[in-house]
Length: 351
Image (cartoon, rainbow, N blue to C red):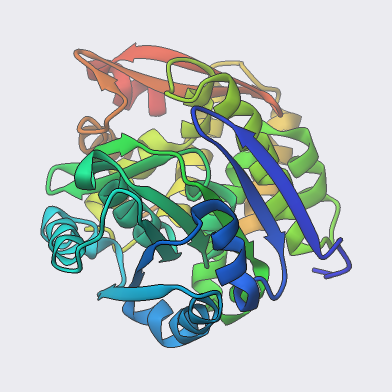
């Protein structure tokens, strides 16, 4: 990948709350002044995990201090296993103990788990306080930090408790991606593969060879921006962003969340593409080309579970409505359509 993309890009998201998404390099050094533009003078509660804390928290805290902020910090163990009611409660107690008020601001520094936990805390503490997303992984930059979805897991399923809460600002410093282990970066590319099937611009970027990572982040966020502005609360168009996610959530559940989200999404895309091909929605040539695009993102990515077990595990998915569940079928690049099917027919559908 090359890195000759324009150093700073801005995307304006016009949802129930309007906010900017900034994409560039060296943005953490100036994060205090960037936050001041949207939060004004207040106290900052910084929420992060132990991995990101060691890498970037000191830099962020120094920038906040230089901007005149008083900041307190909460750190929890990294990983999906921390996205639970217990850690969520610890964050709420931390905010209360540090006398965070409704005019203060919570800052999420980290990947998707940090963004979800901090976002849900911001949505519910004192019935809602302002928060800023600073995503530090590829997956969180291109997907979870934008759009206002926040959630935590229950033992029976992923993201079963949550709220819609738009951030006040999203700052994507792509320099943070250089510290990611290869597997974590590839995990983010699993979500990029989803955007490749949803948006021709992303598809041709990925299939075309070398590209600047900033451009992939920009195009993915810009697609999501268009969807969120049309359907913020997922009553229609936004459901397309769940492409591959119904089988993916079943795969994550079966693995005890040892298979990360993006990897599971890529496995889910393979399953959905196969199902779409066997139903005659896409030609053999399109099927092969789209599978190739997914492979360019994540490499070899074999699902270890049988379809029947995946389907059973997926029945606790939040997209289920009574005896039906919505699956996103592929009819072509940038032509994906929701299908409502009976849950008892899910295994047969995915085959």
